[in-house]
Length: 242
Image 1 (tube, helix red, strand yellow):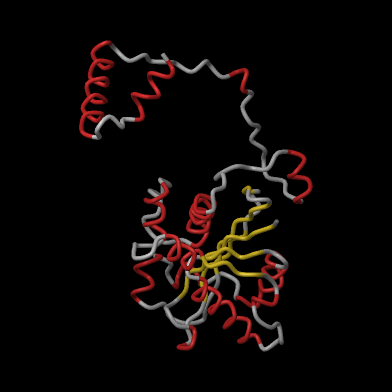
Image 2 (cartoon, helix red, strand yellow):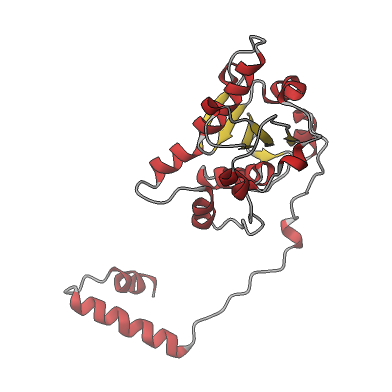
């Protein structure tokens, strides 16, 4: 299954007020593994950037002055996204902006949902962790994912982080590249990272409990047994294994 983790940066919060996309960042997952086949593009929005948005992403009009417009990249973008499943955090925001950009072109290109499915990881997180903070930063902390490089928001960096978060949320492995055979099937030229040979790993170190620790453990079990009226299951298991 081919999935694209996508994020955007914009000039403001509402496309209905004329705000535009200024950065698109995507990373590709094939059968739940990162392929290295990413898409990243800065865009000239032909309008000012709200001060609040500038504080979030730090992308200035001067930096974007020589960048292409959405119309210049739309065909390449749609071909990259076509038939994939989009993974987006707060999908209505990004999808709303993408659909606004498509509509502004007036080419009858339809909506982004016509090209791919969409999964909203914010909706997923709210279902999994009701009543808790479910921002991308909060999910990184919850799943032990390093986002220390994220001093400012950036579409490609956020897409890379969200890929790790999504795989962690759905029980998959993170930061794993395809092996050679699957890489060819996915049509990607990203480098491979072979798995370690189990025979090459050193034996696990076994640390035995000291006599003092064993005695403390037995005292604790005896106390539990007394408080439970002789129903300490660990003592019964110990007796059965002795």
